[in-house]
Image (cartoon, rainbow, N blue to C red):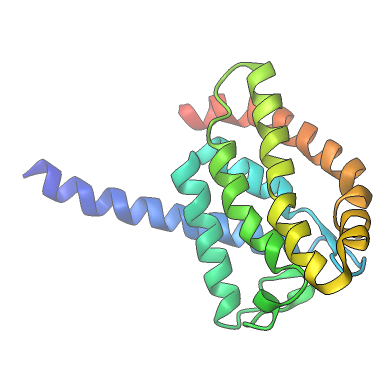
Length: 175
């Protein structure tokens, strides 16, 4: 009897929190530097934290909700855009990479070295589909430069910030 009562409540809580995670991701998309063809946003920081703090399943669920909201036209993507056109545009590969990065970030564990290594790898992981997809629009050389190399300084800062925030927030979230 307890399982029947607890399971729906647990699922409701999980999806409710995942919806909040997608809202955080949508808000972070609006903190953007207008670069072309891919804007620099705070989304990757939030993607890392969703997976690292909530676990792989939670991170992927939050990202999936976010992408679904954008797909139906809600203005959740960078610069308040939404719709299927964004999911076919130059940034679509990065959106696909968000799910993989959130999933991998879920394995961050507790030790500082492990957290730093896993979150760095997760952050870099999202560039693989991002750059590959972008290359179809601008060619490989330009995709690597405009879609990866220019983002390296921000990636390092956001990854370090994710590790620091995780070390502060994770013990509090466990309580």
